[in-house]
Length: 261
Image 1 (cartoon, rainbow, N blue to C red):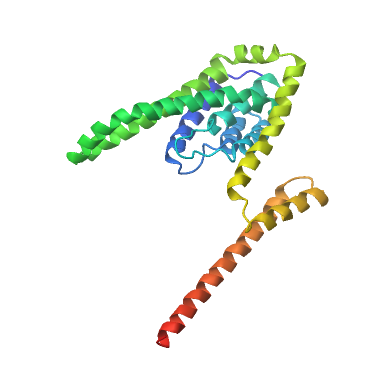
Image 2: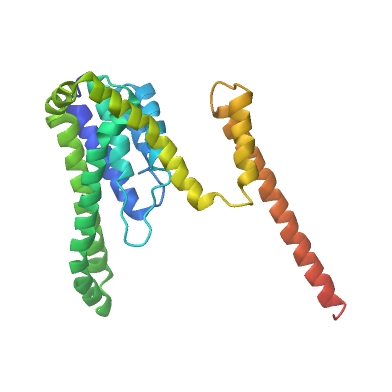
């Protein structure tokens, strides 16, 4: 299917807003599941957006920026998975594999921008010395607009200006290669979850993992929503228990002080 000029502009605007949020990390709009959902609304196919966002989010869930490492960009992964699936008609798993070059491109854009913006430090120091808050804000916003603008430009070119070339290039792939991308796209969510478990899997959390596994494997629920609801309930129970333990600890400490011990 074809993406119109208006849709291309709206996708670029979406990328701009989400890229700004990626710098702030305020609302987490840059996550694939959010980006793909709104991209699906813009393209008029929410189902594709939700499916693309789900597989992309699972794949990039455990890819975190640690130290100087910069993972492939999740924003562009969610955006281009949706765009490729919409324009080429390929499955979301195949589109996820094909979106990786765009995620890597955005990764390098982020690295170049962050390196270049080191030159803004001297003007920022000068603005601080002069207590020039207006100039300080302008410099900070300039870097934000430049980086977000590059993301918007990449999105517009990929989604609208070059959509025929990208779709034609994808359709040129032989069936066995497309099938390979589909398989790799299906494996990426498992890799993402594995990377997440490397960080989060501790003895305190193992029981919850097995409970979720049993629910999905043996109860044949059909979708993950019941498991998500059960997870929220268990998390809320854990939160209440932690609060009760804290209150009891404070009460015990207060009683000990009153007795003079």
